Image 1: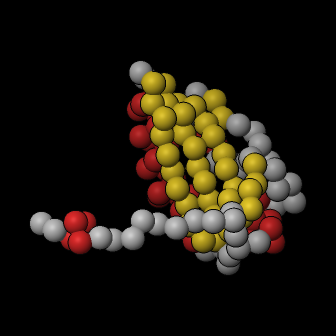
Image 2: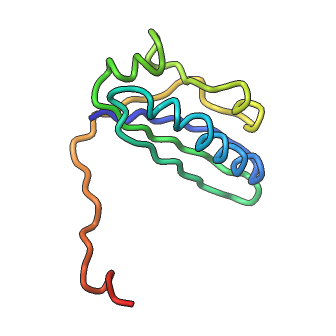
Image 3: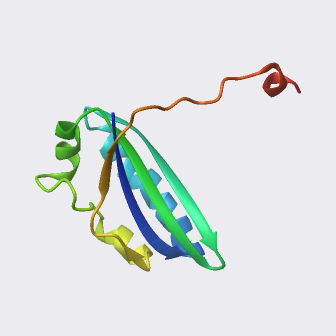
Length: 112
């Protein structure tokens, strides 16, 4: 599995608007691509400044090509998204995922 990682900066309002754009516009595009495995959208807020990190998971570089085109390291940023952001990285990084596991449920987690 390959993680594709991209970051951007926004105001708090811009970050909330980007979240909505991501869910409404980007996720359906990603979900239509064979080899897309999932996405995580994260915020690191400091006052009114928010760093947004997007991690998408893919089965192969070929599946990423279906999303990004020929230049794998060029960020794919819709014009609508760019208008919501203060700044954004023009490139992305790719990382081989070597281990991942969610926490296992425990008895404590199911207690009401």
